[in-house]
Structure formats: structure tokens, C-alpha cells
Image 1: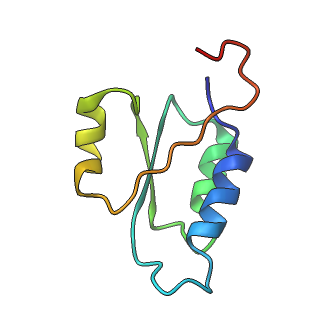
Image 2: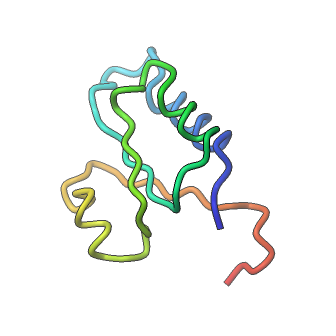
Length: 87
């Protein structure tokens, strides 16, 4: 189940907020094909050149390796709060 673009945008606004010392890092979003709203969100704001979209699954080790999560300072997983099947 996808996470809403508004949730990503709120997270990105905080990650790249001007009051943080270091905002010189890349962010990878992994999920199914992005919709138009998600593409617009990624292209705007002060993080537009820092956010990369991968059509992958964050539960797959190969996909995590592909985005170099093993060399990341942190990994943030956003969950869909409205999903009915919470397994």
C-alpha cells in the first residue's frame, strides 16, 4: 500500500529545512510507480535535485542495496496509516 504524497512532503520539508546544519544529502523514495502528484512534489521545493524515486520494494534486500542503504547515515520508513491489513 502506498504512502500519500503529503506524508512524504512533510518528511522532506523537515529533512531539508533551512535551520538544519547539513542538508547536503540525497533522499531515495522507494515504492510503486509514482503518480502525477508525487512527481510534482519531488520536482518542487529546495530538495528537488536531492530526491530520487526508485520503483522498488524497501522489503527487498537487493532493492535496498541498489539505493546504497548500507552506506546511509539513516533510513526512514514511512507507513500508510490507513491500510486495512496491518500484517
